[in-house]
Image 1 (cartoon, one colour):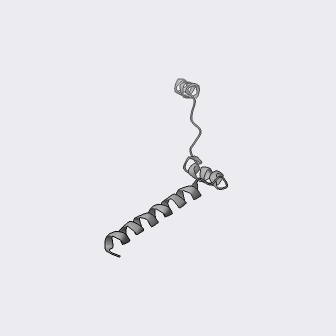
Image 2 (image 1 turned 135 degrees about the vertical axis):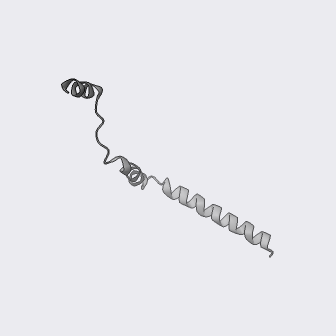
Image 3 (image 1 turned 60 degrees about the horizontal axis):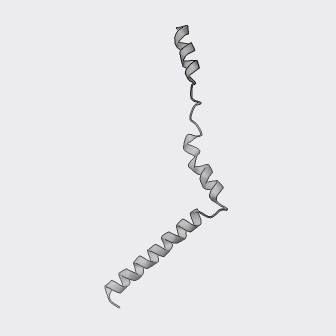
Length: 61
């Protein structure tokens, strides 16, 4: 076995591991947990101020 065959086998092994991780991530049992984690950065965002509230605030000043 020369180095080219070993590198080819290593590439196939890494590709198979990548496909395994992708399949695991899209597993329907865990999908809701991933969706919840994906929305965590937006959990602390303040509610947007509507245009009417902005106009009434500027008129009061």
